Image (cartoon, rainbow, N blue to C red; front, top):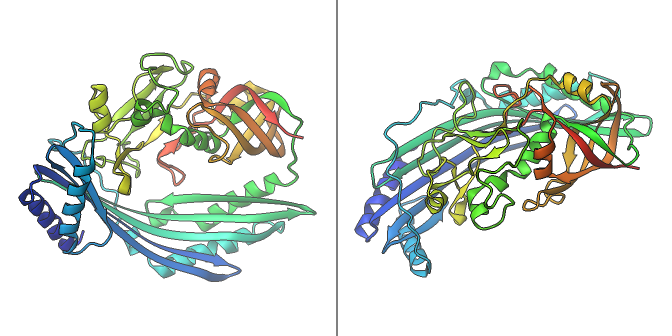
Length: 451
């Protein structure tokens, strides 16, 4: 981090104490990215973006006020202090919020690769162009590569307060996205996929092209099935999407406000005994680790559902104080909305069966590989969802013809109760890993609307 930024932060905290704040903290975050897009053998877009901002919080006359700015310069200091004071003056409800004094020690984590830091425009251009070329050569039915993108990004999170706490984390990432259209007669299908790499050597344009090519060709000939109630297997990507859409139900702030069906459910059964839901900041060997949250609290391994029993929500220090528990280390910065709550690495514990064994156990049903309309097709409070989907028919335990233009409808909390099996296919360390993950799920009796 730039030494000039550190000097601004030191001065801001010093001035805050002089201006009557009893304690204060500053959070600095920066995001820098460089992206390249290729089409028809040419680079069609290059974008370089840098953004950064400072969030200031301080305790003034017993109230915690906050202010934010993206204009980082010496003039920001009086602006932030005065804005935070004004914020304190208009607060009507007095809350017992303080600045966190910090942990005795934090886990070591290096999410910054010097190898990735060497990535330049040419590296990204070569990656995007090579993926497009490989994919166009995969099969003559691939009509066009609509998206061949390569992105390098780096982030800095820095937290300092008047109690002596300093937390800093720097990460970087190399990601690609490849999407195409395939045509057979009048039938046109699309498919796209992203990957994220910790080292440049992990990237293989041919493997990316083969993956996307195989999946788009498999979709050709897809058609809707008759409407029915049937068992389904949600693949890990579709299951992850639904879990992500309902992750807010486990947010303690939502529960305390009555905006979750989990109000008053601690200690009760809310899922099948095969379901264990975990959030953890540090996964050994993973690049997606978060050693501390936005308040400087160590991220923990929190078991939210333990073999079907609801054990804990996700907390920051404010919600933890209200519930008389410890913070789970899930505070997140919400810009001008202040501190919120977000999961770190949120996932179902895997089962023992392979995906193929789920198909055999189901025998006949639908394999859902993608869901759409997650913003419009879910009710985050009731748990109801109705989502456009696609996938394959499973017949006699094997993948058969492709299916599209169908809708699956159920309730997330009912699904938790009736999940029959979980696969073993979560990838914590691959380029496909993400902060929210799920294994493939076998779910009986799901309503499917088709033709």
